[in-house]
Amino acid sequence: MTVTTRLVIARHGQAWCNVEGRVGGRKTCTGLTGLGRQQTERLAARLAAAQSTDDRIDAVYAGPRRRLQESGRLLAAALNLPLLTDPGLDGPRHGQADGMLWREVETAFQGAPQTHPDRPYAPGAEPWNSYLARATRHLTGLLDRHDGQHTLLAAHGETLYAACHLLLGIPVSQSPAIGFGTSHAGLTRFERRQDDHHNTRWILTALNDTAHLNESDVVPVRSGTGR
Image 1 (cartoon, rainbow, N blue to C red):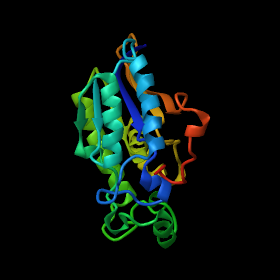
Image 2: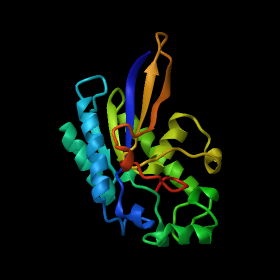
Image 3: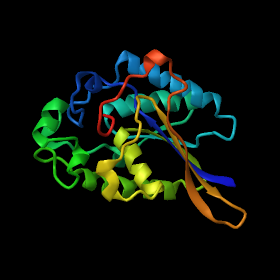
């Protein structure tokens, strides 16, 4: 089978909001820790080493939050590509939960955002299923624009969830019951492949690959969407 299009999702490196257990939304994200930069630099070196092979990257995108921008700049620089900022790759809108401790939010909500996917987990927050609908629509448009290319996203763990639902055909109704690995600077790769009869399908070829990290760099993520 021939690979016609590739989508690579790199989760951002460890951020200060992750260390503190806080909801790092638009207002309160303060960027990567020193470890987070090291994690992303190791991933960037791995991608750069493969750039001359079929694993090339044609475009690098990042969402607007500071931890994504810092991760995206490191990746784009290593690949000698411009960083494209895409507001559509922003994570869920947290409303009044922005800056709060996740344990407080989840105690009040009785679970992670996807536990009750049609309800806002805080005043003004975006319900999980609303986020998935928004994110999958945006990913569909992005993939259409880069048909036939290999695209890298510096993204949130939630973006990985959206991509899995979209490209693997997993019904959104299953979201409260399933999860995916989303380690900091973890690498996930989807390939759209075409056979000799011009039939195409998306294949998940790597999920949360952290082979580029030292064992001490891999920090266990919390339950839920891998914040």
